[in-house]
Image (cartoon, rainbow, N blue to C red; front, side, top):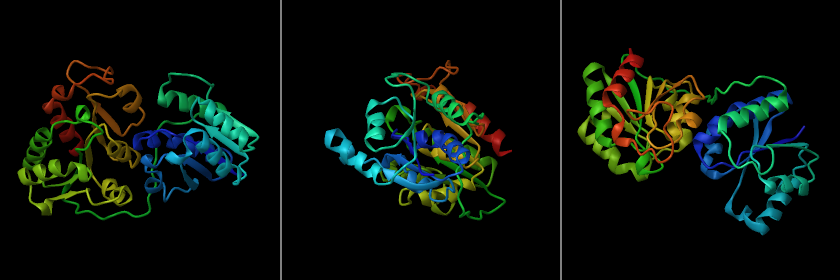
Length: 306
């Protein structure tokens, strides 16, 4: 049986959140699945060892618009899929499925404008499979590094999609210094080339390079075995936090300006920290970056490391 799953959201975190449902469909129909995703989800890097994935099809910009409609329909049609599962309410993808000749189409109710990412995917998948599906994601990787046992390996997700979602680097520096006084530490700075100024500030202020490794020259794929072996992840609400959760690493995720009830409550590996005065209420435009309690972050990090 040939199965296509469409998950067209942009982010790494979105892809991670959908993993339990992708896996559940694969298991139910005893078949690997093809996955249609945007390149920004980094699916090729994240799912290269996933036994449930047959193929990653990238949803490029040339598949937008009217000409893109027919190009994507043609690309899907030549693969002769038996079933398609569409994790959205878009009429466009419904029509693409029909133009592609797929007879068995499963999709969210058309034209639904608002939904909770996790709840909608869970309900949809349970209706399809007839089984209860856990929200806990799992990233499987075969390559695992071996880390020094008497050192606390701590990953810091200093990157963010925008300034309002970023805890100030001065706070991460303060945290690094405080933890270094308590433990023998090695820090891993989860950020890209655009974060190089923040990375250098941390390295200059906290530790020599031998006790700090940064990710700016690594692919997402190359970071996975490193993150997997960390004792703790402290991160802004960014893709690295969600990767850590899926790798079963205890993660403190700082929600300052994004919906905590959508992105912070799906995994037992994730503990959220919100601005002072917020309780399960942080959303877009909360703008609470300067209201994250340093003491709360330090105390919870210490509790996990102990």
